[in-house]
Length: 377
Image (tube, rainbow, N blue to C red; front, side, top):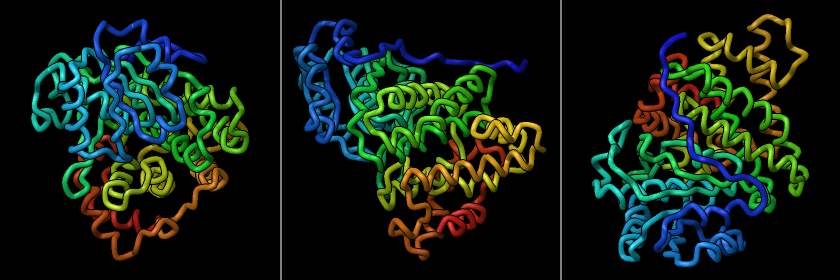
């Protein structure tokens, strides 16, 4: 067995009401409570905030949060004397909360910590509550912020791993179909890319990725078709968390690298962007990753066991493509307002995601990226 390092993620609470129980694990003093206006308006945060008591509420988090939003959250926490931080919502509030807790606790400057392993200071106590079954951000040491020109920049450090996370599936029951579909596909991509990560794939990340893919693929369409199905929602939330643990240790790759410009430039939701690029990047990778893809195909379609690896690889790609369209996602870039003239710019921007591209099973250069965007168009 090759040497590896594995970070196990936060301590977990699960079940109905688990978000409110996080209050028992926070220190005395004000809590910077980071969420967004939609989550607040739905009342999802009410029980948790009431249990905490003294809250500095920050709700100005947008999709693909900006640097200015992050710094505003930090200033709100500093002005309110925050002694802990909660991120409550999808990946955007959780990412803002993670970096806010770090910047408040460490005193570091944001521009000094972009990249991998540069955030080494002490943060404030941190708890995270996902309300979508997708990003897995509550499990990971990664936070992504949109900077000038739409460029996505990330901080990846064990210092961002939360102390606690709450998995409360009742918070996800009201998710609309399009959000259930996009975030579910996002989680599936996390599992697949972790399982094939060129840089840090390891036995524990493989175990989490396989179980995540099993849970997610078996329950995504049920959660889309029957949004109040508590069992399906619970399975999706756990699957997304396990996928987060997998890619926290075996980082994601080409699908995410090509998805980020779609979000940064055209403001497509992150999960949707991953869904649009999934088939094409897997086809690009299939020679290099064929045996791993064959293993994953057997999870989606056990009847393909015994077929050759090339045939199994084709099964994986086709099953995932069918799942994307069955979930209700329109599968072409042009379906979402992307002009063909934009593709060269997208390819250039994707090359800025070298921290992700180095994890891909085979190289993706700018010419490859342009070809893949053209195939997705």
